[in-house]
Length: 312
Image (tube, rainbow, N blue to C red; front, side):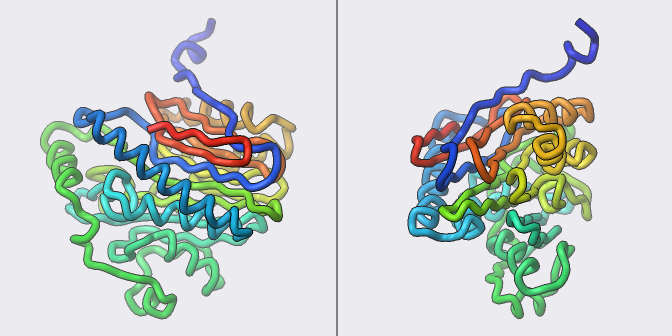
C-alpha cells in the first residue's frame, strides 16, 4: 500500500432519497464533535435538523420549487444557534459575525453574498442577488441595497452567542485549531424534477477579517446543474476551494460517467490531499442522492417517499 493511500482519511458515504420524485437532503456541518460536545447538544441538533426537513419537505409536498424548499430548510437552521450560520455564526478575529451564503438552481442561475454582518437570513440575500441583479456575488452589500431587495436586517449582536464568544477566546488563547461547528446546506429535487442547492456559513472561528471560504463560491462549496447534480459542501473551505469540489463532483458524473457515490468519494479524497476534511450532500436530477464525509462526524438528514433519516 502506498503512502498516499494510508494517509487519506476514510470516506463514509450512504445513499439518500428516492430514485425519482421529490427529495430533500440537508447537512448541518462536518468535523469533530469538539471539546464542549454534550448529549443534550446532539439531541438539539437532531431536533433542529428534523424541523428543517419538515419545513423544506412541506414545500416539495405542496408542489413548490426546489429552490423554495432549500431556502425553507436553511431558514430553520440559520435561526438555530447550534449551527455555524445566521444566529450562532462563528466569530472572526475582530469578534464579529460575518456570514456567507450561496443559492444555485439547476438552470445555472446563481446568487451569493460574502461577509454580510446584518442580514438575518443570509440565504435570502443570496437569492436576492440571483433574482434582482445581473451579478453573481456581492461582498458585504450596503444597507441601501439590502433594503431595496427587501432583506430583513438585525444588529450584529443578534448573531453572537455566549458559546461562540467562548470559542473565540479559546482560539485566541489556546491555539487556532480550525474549529468546525456547523456550516449548513440543502439540496432538493421537486415534483418537476428541478434541482437546487444552497449553503450558508459563518466561516471559521478566529478567521482573519476579509477571509472567504468555499460556501459562497459557485463550483467550490455550492453547485447545481440540471444535467448532473446539486451539491452543498461543508468543512475546511480552503481545501474545497483548491479542489473546486462541488463542480468536480458534477464533472465526474457528466464527463467520466461516475456514479454520484463514486464522484463524491473521489472528490473528498482530493479534498484530503489539500489537507482538508468535511463532507457534502449530492442529489442528481434523476436517481438517489448521497451523503459523504471524511471527517469524524457529519450532521445530516434526508427525506423522500423512500423514507427519512437524521444523524446528529
